[in-house]
Amino acid sequence: MLKSRLIHPQISEVIARAGHSSKILIADGNYPASSAIGPRAELISLNLAPGMVSVAQVLEVLLTAIPIEAVNTMGMPEDDPYRLPEDPPVWNDYRRILDEAGMNLELHPISRWEFYDAVDSRDHVLTIQTGDQALWANLLLTVGVRKAGE
Image (cartoon, rainbow, N blue to C red; front, top):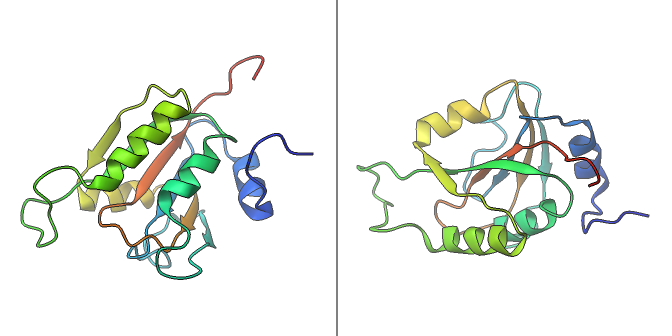
């Protein structure tokens, strides 16, 4: 019986094979997941309908199953027509989820094109496509090290 909240068999299989520094992308509904993906990454689609499932919901469950050492968001380019004057509201949801999970992690925005490059790496093992409609909702997680006794 599993102890974490994660029960999705394919996601569990991929993260069981993932190691330190592996990358997991939780993509929003606007992300081009079928074309902007790492050469070895698997794509799992959870985008049932617009707004279902959200990036925040996936993050909350993944944090019960794997250690995370870094969290990158897709930064907003200065000239982007969808740029917001402050951090996207969904980023505050991510901060709350990380805090509630006892993780002392900051969100680190990287530029849109650097984000795509980071996803296109050999370390990228999994993209979970959601139906999230929030702007700038993509998260790139770096798997950490499991500590003794965990």
